[in-house]
Length: 495
Image (tube, rainbow, N blue to C red; front, top):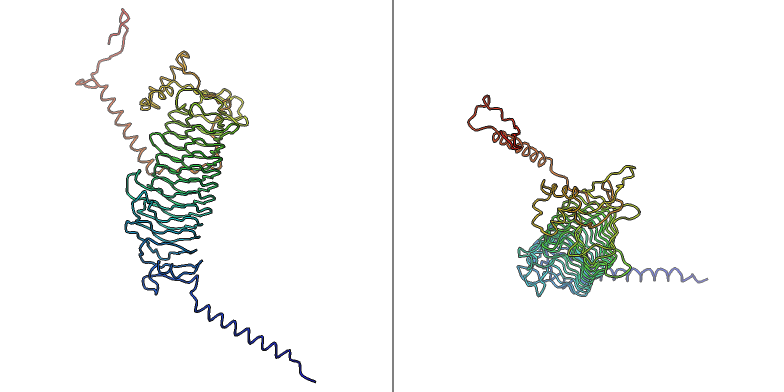
């Protein structure tokens, strides 16, 4: 009987498989490794541009230390990873990194020294018609920082962006998006630039960033459904300006110290269905200003749970503005709680929602039934506030005895009281904290003690000065005459 040929066929197939596998492994070892390119000053590849030229699509290029020239062009999908602080230095010329038509990621680099051409928009990183992931980079001495052009779905996270030392009008934008939907801008710090701006970029998420010291801390133009959350917008001409956009959600941001001549904390211009909720507005020119918002019929904008404190104006409306609802907000010691930015009257503004209005620090009513709501409506009709609206120079006397005397006189003599600007039917007796409110910065205890000590010293000096001024000159204390005031027979006074 002939032995079966099956074992021989199996052995032959196994030998063929091993030969093919060995050949594939050898070929793979000979081919460039897509994830294994390395650049460093002492490496076989010591140029980022050379590594890009050798890289396969999708390759990972690790750059370890060193300083490299700018002008890099990314023409295939790549990931650049900086290790040990590599630097891309443009030497003051052009754009440092440009990726066009490809997906691109870069992290861990210092990028510095762009050109200064505004018309060419010299930038640290430009991504056009591709998706970018830009994480953990340090950009400095840059005209424009990061520029996304038609780069939907891109992620810009945990970068530091510092502008060139130029007048604000000559600076570029720290982060600029153009026709880039669904971008995520998160955890970045961009200071002393011109603007952070989203143009025609819908559904953007801008969260947990610090955008300070610019012209517009953050600016939205024709960008719908944006979510602006938990950012610091301080020391700008305007903290946040939303224009010609629908359904922005602005929640949990800190907007402070924004003192542009016509700016302040937040501005809404031709904006529909805005939700502004749980934000803290402190020490701004105008904390919030509303112009032609909403612009469409049947739409409402909502301000809920915000704190407006120590601003020149808490919230200002153009006279034509309608259909805004305000509830649960706290208006605390603003020089002018609510302003009409022009001649006219406020109409169709709702000051309470679900039976509860807002907290007003100057409310003089009471709560007899203890339900947390004032038993009398809050009416804005302070005479001094009305005078300040007409003559801004009078703000010098805000919170002074003169201002209090003017308002006391207006309450005592209703014929000089100005007409009511607004009426909140259910004012809150105390501020209602909102869960999204950013934590207020704590005062330095040492500074408080120093200020307290200085105040006590000043009070002591002032008291001593008053006593000295009241003491008769040249008369010993023990021999001072009794200067009791008496009425003269004719109704005059004699000492």
